[in-house]
Length: 219
Ligand SMILES: N[C@@H](CCC(=O)N[C@@H](CS)C(=O)NCC(=O)O)C(=O)O
Image (cartoon, rainbow, N blue to C red; front, side, top):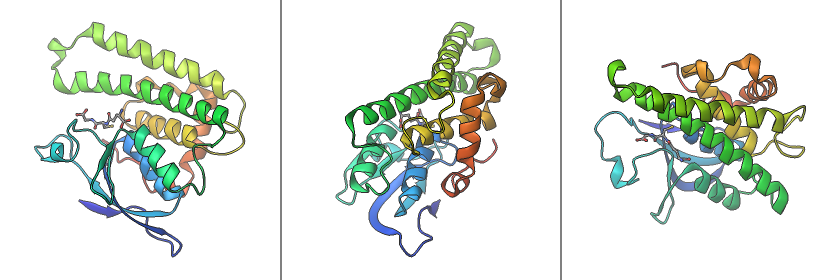
């Protein structure tokens, strides 16, 4: 399925690149939101990760997102793609140029991505193993990472309006995309009452047009 994800304003910049995503992926949503915030026109190809397909010819590790550049190279990993998108289309900057601020944004992103990866590991265990074959030790290990991840992020945000500095950045986008997925598909991993600051940021972010246009469908 193809969807014109970015193009609805005359001012949209034209780019010959193709983003591989899935409707539910919060890692892909990070990039979709970035491109929309920057009004960069682009093509999106939705990949059904759970049906047989030839997607490995594009991304050998079979994950979304991937970004095919106009010279044919394919970038994999949302963090690398985010770097590329922000450097190539710096208006508005979502990864600050200042070294310390940049480090903070990347620190937030890595912690939020790592927390989401532990949620994913649990969901894959439940998807691929019947109840009798599931490893409770594995599920407990992942749950410990999720709880510690959110417990670390909550005080980092505290009473601040944004994760880093005085403006929205990739950090806010990453946190909101991952919480958005978890709240919809696996709310047991994010008890909202335990994380009021993150919950408030996520809800504020969901009001943005870029987030509304990329909201994941219910399971
Ligand atoms: N570290 C990767 C994680 C991407 C990821 O885990 N994507 C999931 C969808 S949310 C995926 O493609 N899963 C399919 C698989 O692992 O086979 C990134 O930041 O892009």
